[in-house]
Image (cartoon, rainbow, N blue to C red; front, side):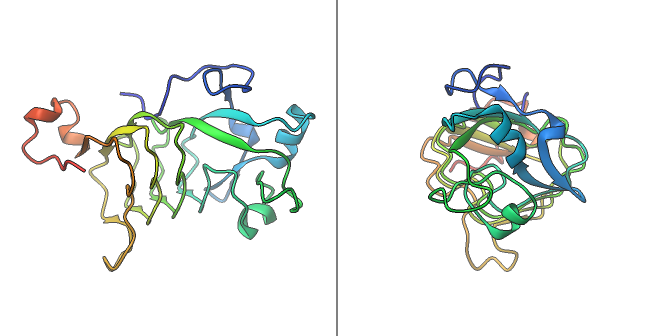
Length: 201
């Protein structure tokens, strides 16, 4: 099962139905942390500053997804590391709006952590989010909150923490209003209605 949302296609990136694949060497990955897509690359391929749509296959060199890593939201960490952002066009790494419509985690076999708000409010993600090939231990609060197109989530057996480590706050899948099931990798081959231990959200 592919870990994604929406069908992937190497398109022109001008519509959500025709997303552009982001080459691994145009992702900002530093010491194993994925910050986002390269600002310099985004500026180069998009001189007219149009909104764009991307598909991402996370490589096996990634161990952590940075805060807001799958969004165009600005943060100092993303700006300082050269990841494209958008914050009213006023920041050095601001260029244009973009949306990630597909995330494939099937090659992300070294991934252990997804930081907070990684894909929050991304309504373009749809279908089942399959994290079963990863080694994720922690998914921080609001990582996928508001991803209303998600219908299912398959978690890896390595998972230890969802939200805040002390359990005090932070729903990971809050406002995922179409989510029908959330299960572990062991359960993913079983139809949802037959899963005795799956959690319906």
